[in-house]
Length: 175
Figure 1: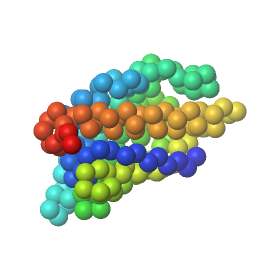
Figure 2: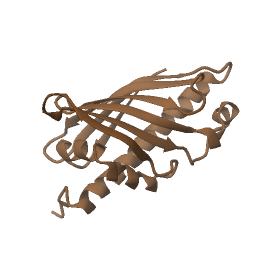
Figure 3: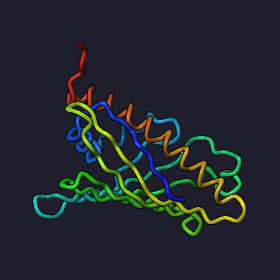
Figure 4: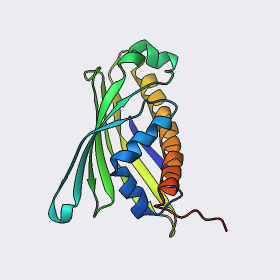
């Protein structure tokens, strides 16, 4: 299933991109409703001008699954590593979700693009391909996961905005 998600973030693109490369930001995502605090297990910088940043971030699901998803997935075994490569010059992050379990049933890869939306905001555009291989309910599970992704990105954006303000990286507009 091809999917796309657009999210507005109330912070300049440079600050948003810097946050996604900062391990401390991922710890703040522990405030999300459906995941435990993620852990950055690798951060490697390479390329001319240190332009490429490779991240591996371990996630564990802690939310509620819909009925179709529970038919296929055990919530206790829903852990995965997000393998990402951020190209700073292109303002693009390519990712692949690698499940710790269910690798034979679940595949997801795609990319994020970060576009300025004026001087003080960012459009985060996510697109990718999600495949759930399971007879009868695979398509239902794919749709449920995409709904969860949309919810996740919205929640992540609000946490990111708060984290940037609290860290002093972005000024709070009180006007």
